[in-house]
Image 1 (spheres, one colour):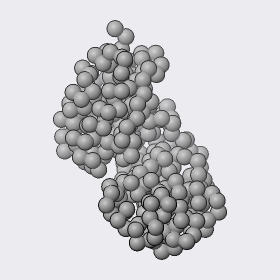
Image 2 (spheres, rainbow, N blue to C red; image 1 turned 90 degrees about the vertical axis):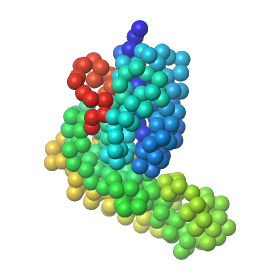
Image 3 (tube, rainbow, N blue to C red; image 1 turned 45 degrees about the vertical axis):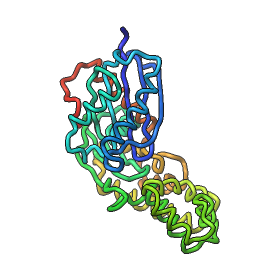
Image 4 (cartoon, rainbow, N blue to C red; image 1 turned 180 degrees about the horizontal axis):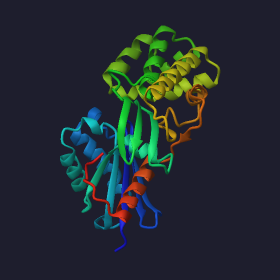
Length: 297
C-alpha cells in the first residue's frame, strides 16, 4: 500500500487539509471553519480539524496515512497536547501519529526551504515568531483579540466598525453598514457584540477595498495596521534567515502589505499554502524517520 501524508493548517478563520502521496503529488484537499482551540474550545477544534481531514481523505485509504502534521494556531494554550493529538488521530480515523506544530512553523515552511528564520502571521490575529528546526524559539504578539493582535484582520475590522459608527456617511462607513445589514450606526453594536469576536475580521477586506479606492479614512487605518505589524517584526525578528509574510492580511496584495513592505525595506518571502507545507513536513519526516514525539513543537 502506497503511503499517504496528511497536512493541516488550522487558523482562527479557516482550516485546510492536504493529502500527498510519497512522490509529493497532491491527492486530496478540503477546507472548513477555523480550529483554534483557544477561540473555539478543544472539542470544537477537533471537530473542525476532522471536518477538513476526512473530506481530504475521501476515496483514499485512511489506514495508508504514514504521517500527519497539524499546524495549529493556539497550540501554546493547550494544557495536554498529547491528548489533543490522540483525539485528532481518532477523529481522522488514521493509524499514524499526529504531530502538532505551531502554525508559525508551517507558515514559515510555506515560504522558504530554509530551516530557520522569521515569520509574520497577520490574518485573523497577528504574531511574529523566530523559527528554527520546526520549533518556535521566540515569539511576539499573538495575544488574541482581547489583549492584542494589532494590525490583524480582527483589528482592521474593529477599526472599520469604530469609524462606521462615528462617520457612517463616508465610503468605508457605508460599506460597513451594508455588510452588517445595519440601517444606521446604532445597529452596528448588536452586530458587533451578538456574534463571535472573530467575525470582525470579515470587515478587513472592506478597509482594503476602500483604501484602494482612495478613501482617506481607510488609508489611515491601513497605514496604522502596517505600522503595528512592522514594529512587531522589528521587535521579534531574527538577525539571520529569511523573513516570511503569511496570513490573509500580510500575504495578500493590498494597501496593508504594500505599506508593510515599504516599512520593512529588506527582502521578504510571501508564504504559499501552509496546509501543503504541513503535508510536505509530514512527508519529509516520514522519509527521514526522525525520532519525534507526536505533540512536539
